[in-house]
Amino acid sequence: MQTGKFIELPHPASLPSIQQLTQEHSLYDRRLNTLRSKLFLTDSEQLEEVRLKKLKLSLKDEIERLRRLGVS
Picture 1 (tube, rainbow, N blue to C red):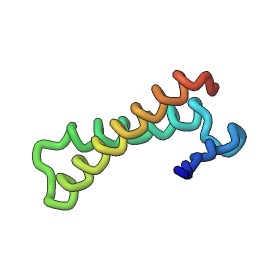
Picture 2: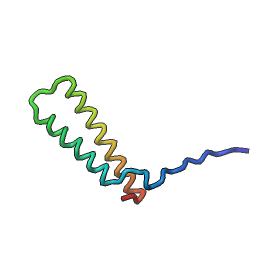
Picture 3: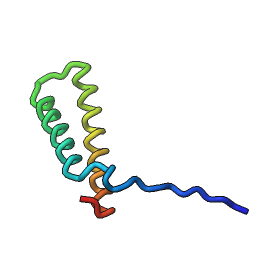
Picture 4: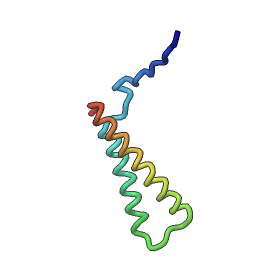
């Protein structure tokens, strides 16, 4: 007999809202714009830029996932 594991979806109230994720995405975007306005970036600023780009992309994916689930 085969047993299956079910993944319980998080309760909608425990999910961040699209608005919250969008605000966070906007904060990262503003910081990236600040970094991009500099002529030269320090090593730590270059690392921050890469990290922020990844975070923005991750948030964008999460926002899209929530939209497909119908969460607002």
